[in-house]
Length: 139
Image (cartoon, rainbow, N blue to C red):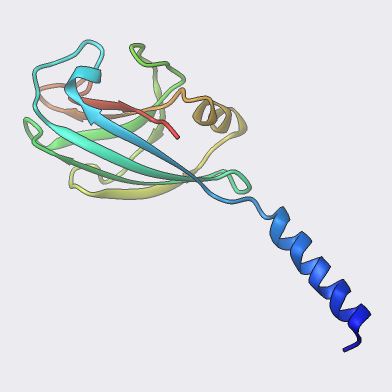
């Protein structure tokens, strides 16, 4: 390989790798005082979240403990700022056991809401059907 060919190859590789989008990491820290309205639960949780803007793939690992009973559901809700409620944006299947892991592909509107900090994670129980613990998704 000549020096010119090698230089062209190296430049092409650099452009290829520089142009690749990297995954973004988000986190939500869940507790009862973040619920709207707050409740008396002492449960806590975390959601470790990865988002790939190129594919719009959202991946998560939701971990919680101390709930008043089994989790009946968990979701990403939005768009909403802290202190506001919103509808379900993305379901978190298999949330009855901790940890719950999964992924989903977002729409353009959902991706914009996530990037704008307008999503929260909510874990629901029979005693707290509106949500027992909640945490805003942040970068």
